[in-house]
Image (cartoon, one colour):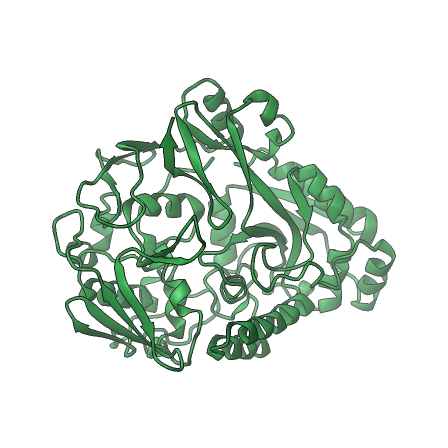
Amino acid sequence: AADPLEYINPLNENGSPGIQLAMAIFAPLVTTDPNTGKLLNVMADSVTPDKISQTWTIKLKPGNTFQNGQPLTAKDYVDSWNLTAQGSNAWKNNGFFSKVEGYEALNPETPDGATPKPTSVKALSGLKQVDDLTFTVKLKVPFSQFGLTLQYLGLAPLPEEVRKDPDAYKRKPIGNGPYKLAAEWNAGDDIKLAKWDGYKGALVPEADSITYRFIPNADTAYNEFLAGNIDFVDVPSTKVKSFKDDAPDKWVTSISSGANYLTLPAWDPRFKNPKLRHAFSMAIDRKAFADLIGLSEPAKALVAPDMDGYRADACKYCDFDPAKAKQLLAEAGGFSGPVNINYNTTSATGQINAEAIGNMIRQNLGLEVKYTGKQGSEITELADTRKLDGLRFSGWGHDYPSIEDYLTPMFKSNGDANFSGYNNPALDAVLAKGDAEPDPEKAIKLYQQAEDIALEDMPLIPLFTKSNAYLHSDKIEPRVSKYVGVSALWATFK
């Protein structure tokens, strides 16, 4: 249920379809063991912090190569990370390196939404190659969570020939993971992968070959499964109440490690007053909306329920209270013009969900509402350039199991998934304290303080968390883990 990808480059990708391909083609330094929830080394042989968790030493396992035969070395990580950290390249995972010493020299201040100009500095001062298999990462301040972050595929290495000309390899990825491209891949094509015999990492999948099909409409994908043409598919929101009857004994569910939000544009002065944002939040009947979505629960926090440090009622402006909502709207001075709600036209329920939220805003706040349907990629591009008019839906699932990975990407001023364009130096400062706290429990308390600041400012309105449902053919049994969810990539064969 996705539009075709334009390229495969995990360093320039944080969307779900691209990450799914990256999981097959590339291998991370470490991963979460699906059986124990503990960190498991993959390409890394060891990851060792200093006493204050500021300088980290990463040693690679010997004998690994890329799929072109090039040995995998520390230099590949250092050079790939420097390429991503160069602000002028505008790669999507640039912000991950903001904690590394020397980041500012590669990312000069620019107007909001603009791409930084090239700089004479091309390398992070905090990245150092020690030998062929060892490199160190010095952070600007201590960060106790850094070891967890290394499982993120946005840190995957690129081989030298790809680094020299990334555009030439947009459709010819050369990875270090269990699968490689099996056939020429052109725009709009399905992506065919074959098992790569050179992979020596942990958790080797069983399948000899995999085809990823791009079917933009989720209902069409679902029907393709029922017709026997697909082995694994997400259950779309339109089928959450019928899938068990449609495909008995061919479904699995898992609690989602993620949350869903209504995003308010910080660049629009009409939304500047926090009381106005609180009014919008309290005008929403989350229980009714979650029931409409299906397999869902109302959300009153910014982080997912399965995270350490999650608080079920962290949000004090998430109770449904139309009278209070009207009062807050009046205190904020009202709202000028119609409220525009943007929705994704490739989602079968995009317009239905938008109209449900819009009806609540219209009925409970007395505001005029209009709706704009666009492709998801167009909505994202307009928001990234601060040109999107009105509200949109957004969601987030963590890349590593820490509440920090909800707060830094979405609420830090230069976060990679700062959907709303939000900026609060006070929140940035509290996040920095949490990052620098070596005691995990004390760090969580500080991250909760950051969540409280974000909930008070409310650039994102929590809406719901949901369970995910999937259908699988008779041939496979997808891996289901309470730590990492459901994966078809690591399915077993019946």
